Amino acid sequence: MVTFPGAASAAANSWELVPESPVAGDIIEIKGSNFTADTAEVLVSFEKDVPVSEGRYEYLLENVEISPGFKNRFNVQAKGAEDLNVRVKMILWISRTAKAKGGVAEISQSAVPPGTYQIRIDGKSNASEVKLRITGRQQMEVNSGNFSYRYNTESIPAGNFEIKAGNTTKQVTLKPAEKPPSDVNTSPGKKESSKKDFSGEWKNWNILAAGTLTGVILLLFYSRRKKR
Image 1 (tube, rainbow, N blue to C red):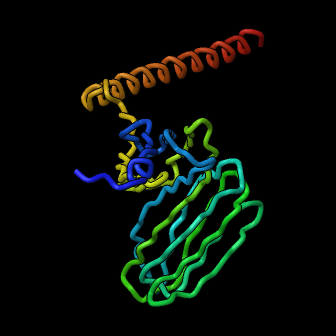
Image 2: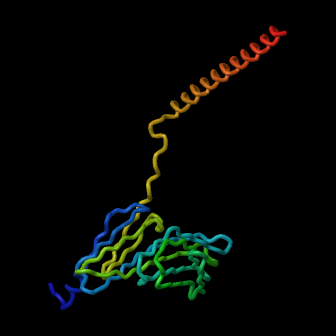
Image 3: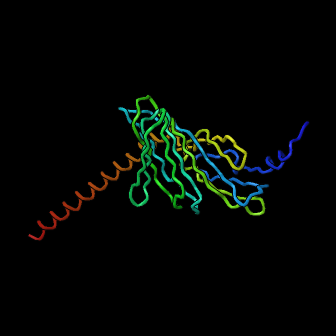
């Protein structure tokens, strides 16, 4: 086995993902170790096929969290599009537009202020669908060779996405969030019988109330006649 000079040091840095099998909506943590530089770049990318309707496509990203610090970049690439609009809602909607070159339109924005944003991506296309590739880059400080970066997956659709830190890239599968079960302990038969019982009680209550009201009216009627 031949070892080239510098190969070991180049491959020295590594990172792990916690949890290893995240579910949509989880906050994942990327833990890096053995990084020799003062900073490390973390890139999180995913792709989304967006259908085109009447010559237009649109995709909405909710609750996109930008971490503190301005050493970041947000990039959107649209394949099969005529143009690309990226609209970010801060206090007001702020828009950027790019024309496609060779069927690919791209917009990048760096030094995005930290916060939680709503991002709308749209444009024109003659294709049946547009493939979006969305990448967020964050530069992290490295302390004693280590760093930790937390990322909220709420804005990522379930499926495959990519994480790159240092010179290591990993494919991660984001599992769809499970919907909470409804009426697990109640069978349809029990539901129906409970409704019948309730309706019977309600009917008995109506009869009792009507009988009481009739009795009061008769009592008042006879008491008046007695006074006369």
